[in-house]
Length: 210
Image (cartoon, rainbow, N blue to C red; front, side):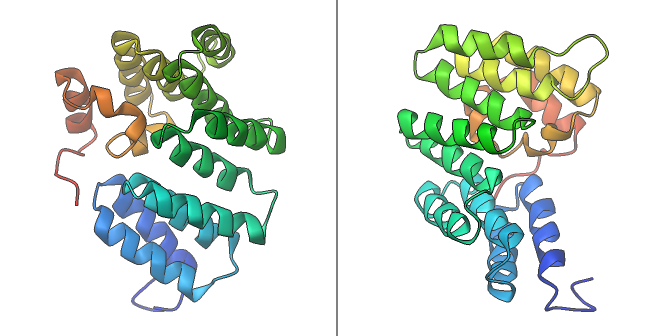
């Protein structure tokens, strides 16, 4: 699609997501920036750029970009999520909590924002609040979608074995969130673990980032 129409912003956005999931972050960032420049008032393209900046580890610029997205659409729950994620990595936990709560208020069905709120509660020492969220995201029997979210909260609580077990279930059940497994900072403490590396191998994500 890009070769046929180089000015098609959405195609570059989707391509940047694919590159990001593979850990090809420099290329992903280049495509995301081009997409945003092609359609500077698009919420999708602006929010995608903030997401790629976050996964590339440029948290300050991700914050700046998320704020730009919110100037375009103050009701973008994804922009609030990405602000919360970047604040989390900068250890600005009260700010992160406020953004995740705003994301949940704007989109009550956003299980990702709820799990990420649980992560921040856990990593900032508010363990009981994290466990309350853990109970909320605990999937019922036969529910495959929540396994990845469960792993996020366990990671925030520092419960590595439980986080890894949930990730293994998520990969086996092909939960949607696992596409970010290679690049998500939320699992940084797990990356050197043999079980985690095996998951990346299973998903074909063992090549280096860059």
